[in-house]
Length: 79
Image (cartoon, rainbow, N blue to C red; front, side, top):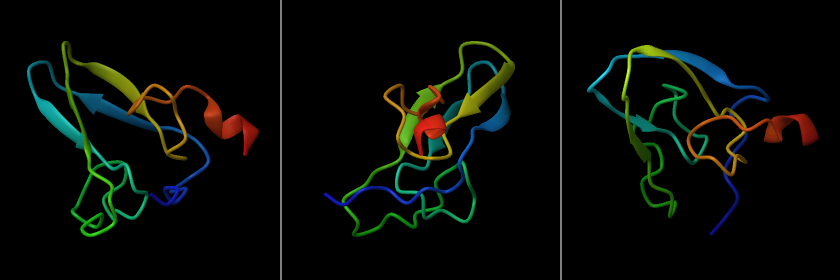
């Protein structure tokens, strides 16, 4: 599989709501970053689903290189 496109070299701060499910873009092609808009179709990538346990701000990976998908782990600092 090809490497994901770097959408941005930093995290996306996102307010999530407890009990809701979210789908994070894994391919880097979505126009709705950091969320999936279906642009991955045919690429071999799939969105990363996560459920918010509490209402808070989370930081979703923008570079698509994190080891803690979909959350930022600082991998962008090495790009």
